[in-house]
Length: 111
Image (cartoon, rainbow, N blue to C red):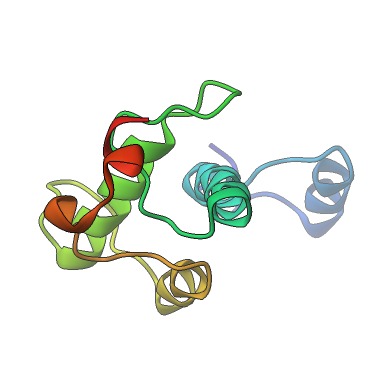
């Protein structure tokens, strides 16, 4: 693509930006998922999201949270490493980096 080859002219980029162009698909998806995690935190007061939890919009938030833990620990093959900013943002909304299933109340495990 012109973008990956560095051939997009500044005026073309400005026009595409004005149309809402997403230049970083991974980053955009991460932001969407983070926003869902933030909503969950505001509603539940924590990020101890059950693995099979699906948000109202169909986002598999429990899976995403689990994937963030794996990316942080470096145990997920092919996963992009989390940036320090991403780790800090997740920390700010109560991210639990080590899953403690035995410590969770039954309500959180099965609801």
